[in-house]
Image (cartoon, helix red, strand yellow):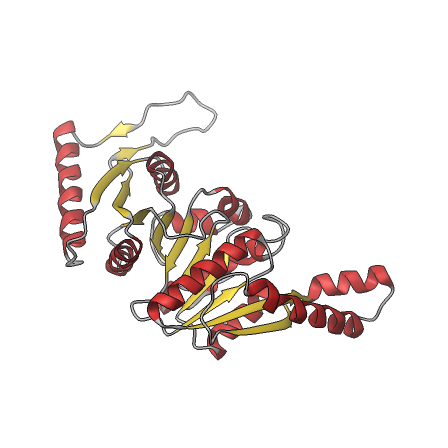
Length: 307
C-alpha cells in the first residue's frame, strides 16, 4: 500500500459504503490512483425475490442489474470522485465478486463499509469479516461516521513480521491526515500458570513463576523493543508508544481505542493481536459492527486466511 495505483471500493448504497466511497476517493485523489467502484447485486437475494414474485431468476436478475446500473452513477457522483473513475454492476456472490475484481482491476487496496445496507446481518457488513481473511491486498473497513480524514490513529504492534509494515502505513496515513498517532503493544503476563487438577474440585490460585522485579524487567524489555521497532520507521512525526496489559489482545486494543478516541486501527493481517479474535468465529460480523473504529488491515500473501 506504499504506492497505490488501483483502489477498489465495494458499495451497497448504505451510509457506511458512502463513507467508504469518500475515503476511497480521497485516497485515490491523494495518490493519483485509479478508482474502481463496484456494486454486487446479491444473487441469493435476487433468487428470494424471484420466488416471492413468482418470477424467473434470470428475468429478475436482469431487472435488478438494470435498476442498480441506473442508480449507481447518480449515487456515486454525490461524492467528490476522480474524473476517470470506473463503475461496475454485477450479479453474484458479493465476496467472490469482490475478490475476482481485486484480480481483474489489479487493486492495491480494497475499501468497504463495516456495516452494510441491512446492518450487520446483510450487505457489505456480512462479508467484511471474510474479506478481511481472504483479501490478498490491504483492506480498509470504514465506519459510517468516518468519511473525513482520521484524527486519531492507533497502530497495533506485536513484533510479528507484519509490524514494520503496520508502522510504515500508520506513519503514512497520520502524516497525510494530520492525525495523532499511537503505537500500541498489548501484552499478557506470560508467567501466570493455571494449576492442573479436577475441574470439579476446589479451585486453586494461579501459580506466579516470576518475581515483581523480573516482571518490571520484562516490561522494560517490551518498551525497548517497541521503541527500537518504531524508530525503524525513520519518521519524525510526533507519536506515542504505549504498552498495555490485558487479559486478551482484542480487549486491550478495544479499551485503548475507546479511551483515546481512536478512529482508525491499523492491524497486521497475520498478527497475533486482535485480528483473529475480531475476525474468526460466528460473531465476527457483530464484532466489526460494534467497534467504534475503522480498520486498516495490512495484508500480505502469507496473511490471507481460509474461510
